[in-house]
Length: 118
Length: 110
Image 1: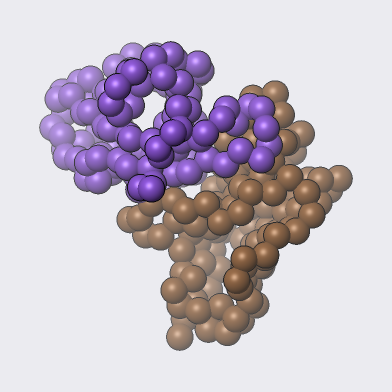
Image 2 (image 1 turned 135 degrees about the vertical axis):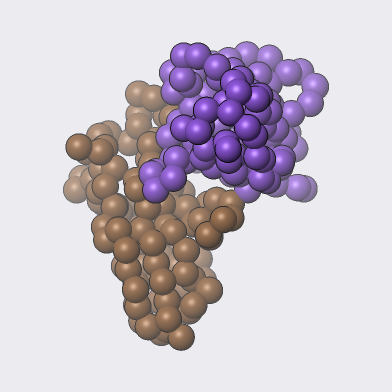
């Protein structure tokens, strides 16, 4: 049972390009969370998705960022027209049930994607 | 003021020492996580607590709900324990948004 898989591990983009970050949750998990870790800062919530639905995107920047979790395939975090300030580590986590409910539900994290904008 | 505060921010110790990392929070929570992050690496979940104490190998985590405080202890520390340790809480009203501390950077010298 593979854990949460993120790819690529490292991504370099020039300013103005698009970045696509992928997250395959653990088998059977239908709840996905994206977090961003800016250099020298703590992790911050970005978005919570269930299959085909965005549940909470209150942590997403209003422009250039979007996320999806289609019926088939991985969750995608998409950043359009990247800027230097987007350089960060982006982590995905998944859970079997919503974290909002049962306090015994665990979230499992991926290895992260380190985005560098040059 | 951050909702989750960790101390110390940095900790250097000698191999074999007993390590304590603290986490204080200011909100009502449903659970607290301790996570480990190696340099350039992913995040590993060490513990999830809603009350009491948990032990796994040389790691012990405790939580005091009334005092809004948790500690992570490492016994017989080893250089491979060197990592950033992160406390994260599930706030009752918005549990899907884990709120993270800034992390404690631990270095264990041989």
